[in-house]
Length: 125
Image (cartoon, rainbow, N blue to C red; front, top):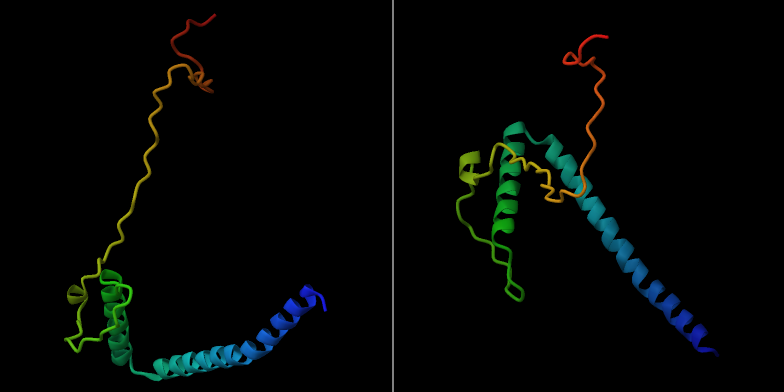
């Protein structure tokens, strides 16, 4: 048997071995997300707001304090923030303005633009 055939056989066997658990995992994850979306949709608006605040605070804490490598994840039972001021999320998005680069090269100059207006400074002929 050629080496190519052996490698192809190993590839097929590993695909058969790992495909079923992968499909099962992804299918189960999709099912859980779908059921969670249906449950969330049926909640009253105050409960939906509470879930939103909890998720936003969790995401905010995760972004501020990423877990170091090798450290176990810890969940604290602290008071969850209930208002946007406690969450400390900015209400306005900061806009960044691009500045035009300043050209110091005097050798390259742009020619003056031709004006479509008649020139009032010239005497009439």
